[in-house]
Length: 231
Ligand SMILES: *[C@@H]1O[C@H](CO)[C@@H](O)[C@H](O)[C@H]1NC(C)=O
Ligand SMILES: *[C@@H]1O[C@H](CO)[C@@H](O)[C@H](O)[C@H]1NC(C)=O
Ligand SMILES: *[C@@H]1O[C@H](CO)[C@@H](O)[C@H](O)[C@H]1NC(C)=O
Image 1 (spheres, rainbow, N blue to C red):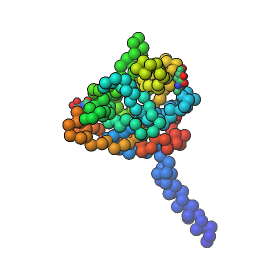
Image 2: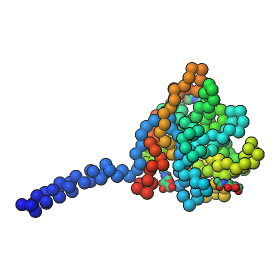
Image 3: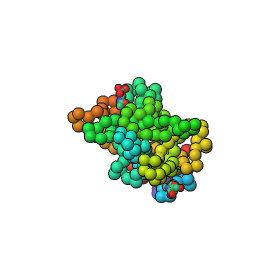
Image 4: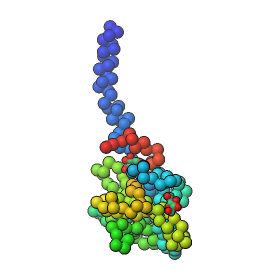
């Protein structure tokens, strides 16, 4: 009597467990959707991280003149840039949308732009006033992860003339195929979107959120335990 009740309940458990397991341990971290996002730095090879670490720091801008800025990082969401993808659904689908952050009062668009360094495969990212580069955006389904393309992004320790040669971590990009030729002062990183609210714009803004694209983002990147996910 007891044995058969036990056997029955085991059958019940065996039948129920695959479903429960799939719900409890997805293969990839869960995403939500939002128009606005912060970009979080993920050092894909932790052995190459800087000291102090830049893991889970946030993308910010480094002022380098009127309407001019390079791409840098800050430890927390305070002073981190709020980004949005901009474009029609057709532009997004064909990889021609752009990524923008609003600057100034009244707000104007500063697009993420890539400009080739002289005689190099490496491009320097900037957030100067303007539309930025088409072809910068968040990887779409069926990519299991959401991250900023075009990869590979680099975090580079460079001295900036505007700051009398002081060193900053600035962000660059190199085609994935040449990533092993990245300069020695640079470390490959992924830039992951963390959901945040896209603010309303005040009257008189030069920016517009009419074409802001809703897309996948992570709720809290630093809480993701990467070892639980694969491949
Ligand atoms: C983030 O970096 C960790 C190592 O620090 C790595 O295991 C993980 O795959 C990376 N995440 C993505 C989405 O590339
Ligand atoms: C945003 O996308 C729309 C639609 O393509 C375009 O008309 C507009 O100029 C873009 N805005 C910026 C700042 O790039
Ligand atoms: C960047 O390079 C300078 C000069 O070599 C060095 O003093 C500084 O510690 C480096 N910064 C980081 C975060 O590694």
